Length: 235
Image (cartoon, rainbow, N blue to C red; front, side, top):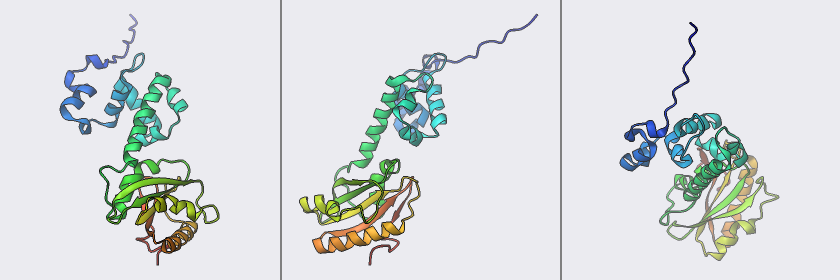
């Protein structure tokens, strides 16, 4: 007698013990105890036909490689995945955007004591940008962050960067100093010769304006370079 294969058993979230369900685990263990798939499952809320929400989250992370891959994917790319659609895709994008904004927002008037302080403030978000962005971190006399200003989008070179734009908001805010930050979409933060020339130009302008340029950071993928530490563009 021919045997027919049994359908694969795929338990739904409601079939799992209470202490294994992501939302319940977050309540008693805290969000840091959950892995990426469990956190993503909470955002998605429900799975699809024949697939519970944790399996869906695991599949999405495998497809895009990581949480960073999800952040780089377009809304249409996410919506096109099996069981997704626009509703789930927008939920993911909204959650990731909140994370980016939190990472880019100085919390409790952050004080800058080292290049790492600035990198920690901006690296998560800027490391995922697909175009070059130049930002200035405005500081007061005690190196507390006043705010972060988005100055320029596009390839960074001395012909296109206007020094007046770099210092405009610093002058308006009466900032004592600034730190310049830009990203390399390639993920490699190694400063180019043009980066060094632009730095020299901004340092000289800051001396004339009595607004010190403390550093220029190049952000890559989960890494950064301080031109000040490497003595590039700073005398």
